[in-house]
Length: 195
Image (cartoon, rainbow, N blue to C red):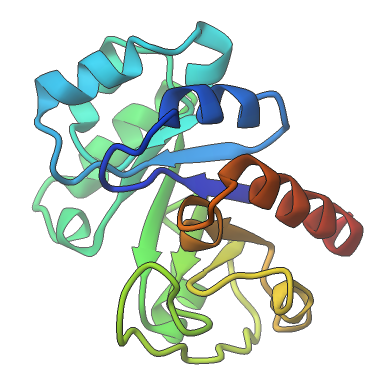
């Protein structure tokens, strides 16, 4: 699985870049923590239906009632909500993918509530300063685990060797001068390694 996480803040040509990336068989994690619900809704309205079906929301989960999105992502704070199991079952019945973030390997490997987990930071983060990688080597996860944190062309092969089912990228695309070119280079290298 190849996941592109949206940049937190708006960047020039972001919508056009995402539309072009959506031509590839990937998943987008829409992570816009500074956007309120209305701004997130306006952002989503800029995409076609086939593009929206590739998107997983990190915030404002209720918008999935208005858009045919791929699924929902649950942060650690979401997972501590009292009615989390009911919420998960409700969306599972609607055939939505459900994912979650983890920072501890044993928690990510032993979880079976979500379709897949993002485990971070695997390598030193590109988008977050002083966020040191933990060089996770997976043992026997119950569900697929996606590597997040510092993913580059140079360490992509290690993620497969470490037992990950795919990668999620942010800084190695959005913090480059040519995001689309960076995306394509990473994606094609990913295909050579994971396919």
